[in-house]
Image: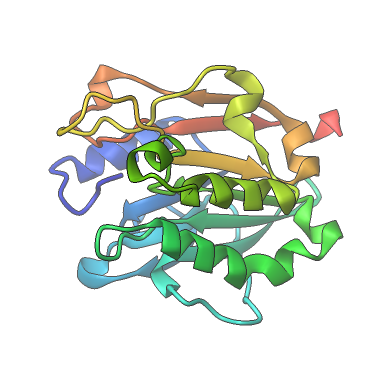
Length: 223
């Protein structure tokens, strides 16, 4: 959300609430009174990443903690009789590098991914600050390997399910390249239940954030 610099904080929440979402996975944001429940990890100035919902959330305790506490928020949600694990994942930049943060976060979450019954009902989303296009620029495969790890753990890209071509989620003021920094990955059950995943590129939102939001819909009758 680029929230800590934005002058349009209330407008951002107004936009989110206009969609009446069951839950949100948000990064670079602060809490808001419109949200009935939140699992929110913050850094300086009270901004961070979190899971927000109009339904009751219960924090999912990680067995081995977090190397980067403000990069992972993990919550349990029961909705329509289904127990879902929601993970808001932020590619925290350290010395200009987010990929090492992401790899460490996956390691922190590995014990969850090994539990196959749980893994199928996990949703991971956020501003990863990762893009395989960076590998060519940086002359390595670190970003590719991160996404391959997600796939190997049994997660599927919800955006690619409905968009064969690359989708731009970041409008960087110093680059015209169509960066994709934001993602939504799901375990098999949730992926099968995903009936739409749209990246909203609306000029009316450009002053609110330099990211394009991802809005996904799930229908549990599909599974």
